[in-house]
Structure formats: C-alpha cells, structure tokens
Image (cartoon, rainbow, N blue to C red; front, side, top):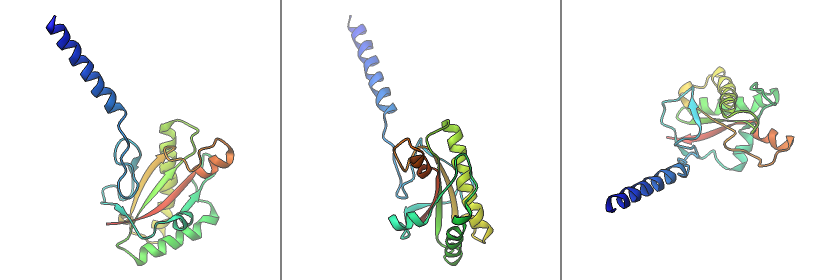
Length: 172
C-alpha cells in the first residue's frame, strides 16, 4: 500500500513540474528581444553580440524607424527609403553602433509563414542599409512574425500597423 501511495505522489509531482514548465514566462533581454522560445533570428550579424537598448530609443525614434509593408509583401515602399538611407548614413558615420531589424506581420497566416515573411521584410530593410555602405556586421535580423502585434484589433487598419519592420539601435 505504501508503494502505491509513493508512486502516485511521484506521478503527481512530475505532472506538476511538467505543467509548470509549459507555462514558463517569456524572457526578454535588455534590447527587448525575446531570448527563449519566441522569435527566430537569422541572417546578417547573426552571431554578433547585440545587447542593451541604445540612446536612439524612445517613441519618437521608433516612429522614425518603423517601416510599413503592404499585405503579403516584403518590398520597401519608396516613401520609406529616404528614412532608411538616413539610418544608413548614421550607421556609416558611427561604425560602433549596431542595429537589430525586427520583422513583423499581421496575425493572418500560419506561424511558419509569418516568421518567413517577417524575416523577408527585415532583410529588405537590411539590404538597403548594406547597399548604402553599412557594414553587415552592424546588423542583426530578428523575425517575430505575429508575436508582437502593434494593434490588438482585427480591422484592416490594425493589420496595417502590424505589417512592419523596425530598426532598433543597440549598444555593445
């Protein structure tokens, strides 16, 4: 009888541990980048050490460094290119600065498709920076897909705000 109770208690204990592991909180580093189990990182600067939010942060900088995309597209809009080129000029003049380019999508589509599309969007911005002379070692790509929505609603206006790439300045 004691053995049955001991086995039952061990099973209950293992179940509790397993369930609590499934509900682990997401952890973000100082740059606001999820460290475990969330976003996919790849591409330019993948192995570089990118930590810490830089002085280029703040709401105003985020608006200037956010670039929106059309539905199911990853080509940069012509009206956004001058702002991307301005970022390129800053990075060329400040070769110690690094950026993370975050790719995002609206919630429509599968997780895999959204991660890939968000990566293409971030890469499109990175390609423009590199084409202007930015060292690829200054750039890291992070694809969030639909994990970090800009707008919680389900209207086309909300979806438009979700389809974006953001240049985030970081420090070593």
